[in-house]
Image (cartoon, rainbow, N blue to C red; front, side, top):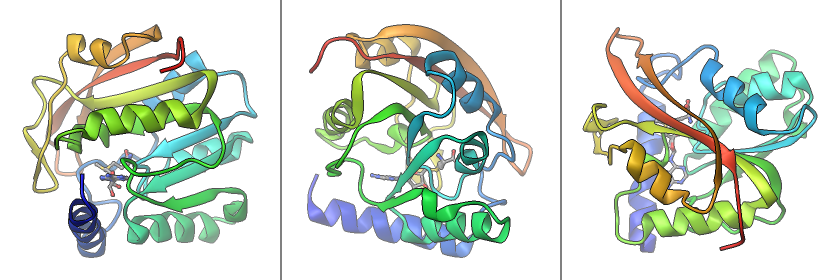
Length: 213
Ligand SMILES: C[S@@+](CC[C@H](N)C(=O)[O-])C[C@H]1O[C@@H](n2cnc3c(N)ncnc32)[C@H](O)[C@@H]1O
């Protein structure tokens, strides 16, 4: 991954969030039910610390803050982060208690460690050489020892593209291989229904890290 790759991704995602309202993007969900259930399945009870990578303008942060969790949202798009912050601020939520981090996850250097790593629909965009290894290294460095993860990506029968970008679709075996050193607590298949009514097949893996990388 080069600086050009990051700059191209920033342009792409900023444009996407400038051109489409957060409630009209294909990945919008009013209540991130699967994420919340799986976080509860793998993590200690609230309050806990959660980092939502590729969180964009998504609403998971609203729900976690309401439960008393400490949350960091990491996203490559400052436009998305601003939209999330403004939405929460308008709702009277504690936006200053959230860490808002604009970064390319592949090059991000976490300054602290969290109890839970959450990713819905970021990893499947990482298709360049070394991208997945970089992502996994960052995940391990961002989590406390034995920390938990919840990762949901397009399944093998999911869309081939999203937001105009080709994605990698994950089989169950591939997801397990990524996290071969982890204790898997739960895996799920879900179908996300987009605002235009299309079904998108996801695979989820939730568990706890094993030995250090
Ligand atoms: C399909 S959206 C999912 C947003 C959110 N997780 C949700 O479920 O509503 C993918 C998100 O990943 C972000 N993203 C894409 N590539 C990234 C990267 N390399 N580093 C950090 N964020 C990235 C995009 O800006 C976008 O917000």
